[in-house]
Amino acid sequence: MVDLHVRIHNLELKNPVMTASGTCGYGEELADFYDISKLGGMVLKGITPRNRDGNPTSRMAETASGMLNTVGLQNKGVEDFIHTIYPRIKDYETSLIVNVNGSTLDEYVEVTEKINELEKISAIELNISCPNVKKGGMAFGVTPEGAGSVTRAVRKVCTKTLIVKLSPNVTDIAEIARAVEDQGADSVSLINTLLGMAVNAEKQIPVLSTITGGLSGPAIKPVALRMTWQVAKAVNIPVIGMGGIKNATDAIEFLLVGASAIQVGTALFTDPFIPLKIIDGIKDYLNRHGLDSVKSLTGRLQM
Amino acid sequence: MKKAVDDFRVIENQPLNATNHLIRLRSPVPLPEIYPGQFVNVRINHTDEVFLRRPFSVFDIDYKAQTLSLIVKILGKGSTILSRARSSEEISLIYPLGKGFTLPGRKDRILLVGGGSGIAPLMFLAKTAGLPVDQTDIILGFRNVEDSIELKEYTKYGSIHRTTEDGSRGVKGRATEHPLISRDLGLFDKIYACGPLPMMKAVGIAAKKKKIFCEVSLENEMACGYGTCLCCIEPTTKGNLRVCTDGPVFNMNLLQW
Image 1 (cartoon, one colour):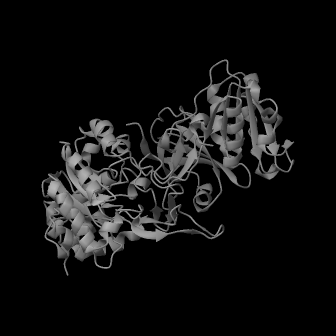
Image 2: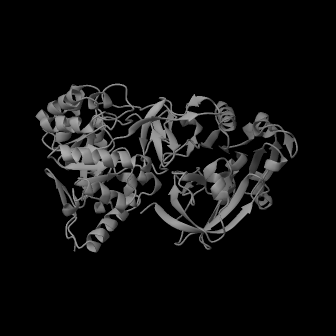
Image 3: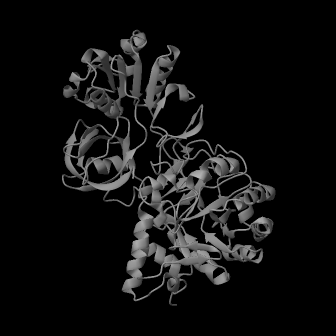
């Protein structure tokens, strides 16, 4: 029996496989397919202080081994989450993590303070890396000062495990990771989507309503893996890796370069069962390699 | 569980004309109840270039044989590859997805308006509704005779009226120019449309003006097909709704057309 249990500060995960924010809703759609208590955790769709309609359509473009999106944080706001959604999902037997967004420091703090009150939420993932909103989001995440300032403000009020989700659209992601660690982050997760663009050549127009959008899927995996490796070397807090993971081998690669846990995102769109297949695949891998704990894979890469 | 992902086996792939194929797939497990207007999301085999699945309305279903049929119109890379599916090939489906049409009452007189491969869910609706032939009119619009799809067996479910834009088959003009729409719309209790957006808009707006119940099936581009990605949203009187999960069938009164 291999031990898949992982701990990210006070966040207990029965296994290292979570679903990524924006790709699993609030969990209810995945629950239509299988028993989601098998998942290590779910990072819920990003929440803002108030309702956001999101961006106009067209919101997506398929690309080679991936896709661009510009959903723009469509959600009904934190109060709706607390009163409508949370009561429906709080008894899911998996770790629930809320992805917190804002367009100002005060908004990040406001959402965090409200989420603090929810007993069944295990952690907060601070989203300073959404490329599809005009204010806040990635604007905070692309400088060490900006990332540090949001982390500091939220840390002051956050009573839960605080994960900061990093943007890959920077020159030196390790520097940003160090800045949020210095300001009290308990963990970092990476990468959010890479800023990209698609053009309809026949019509000679951009495909996405906002012209640019976030690239995700297997196409970004090598970039995500490299950044996870760089960040894991740079910080002493646990790292959560993501970006293009579609099978157990991909997941294991992220663990080997230093991640303690991983998130599956866009791959869910092609097959909602992928997280379960990854959990089984990690078990097989550990057995084949004579290892008894998934923790032993973290940073095991031989140089 | 309400939804599943399974590998179906191709048991028939028959060209209906130059651009449309009828593909019949056998499920490895007994099929759940699937309603007209619901769809499946189909993985495209043999390529790394088509990353996302492709959604198709269910055209027909045979619970006893555990088969469902799709009409695949060749539009791009994904549908081109799918149209070449070989017998006994395994194809992964996510199913059943979305909310279907409101079934008509037994006394309703209904009009179905389909354009191109949009006829698929409407034929399934006509068959499922099972109304007497004289209560069901079906207008099928195609570009020309080559584009037209034969559906002889469906004459037992309703009166089929064809239009082609060039007049090479049936009444010349667009589906929306058919006299049943331009002149006789008031005869119907319920109207259902599926096809190109301009066609659905024209039918929907005409029905709304006459305060006739009307449902249309949208096909906004989607990534997941099961409600999580929020790419396929449609602005409605109830806010941004997901075509894949809150639809694809919408009552005209909800839409902001």
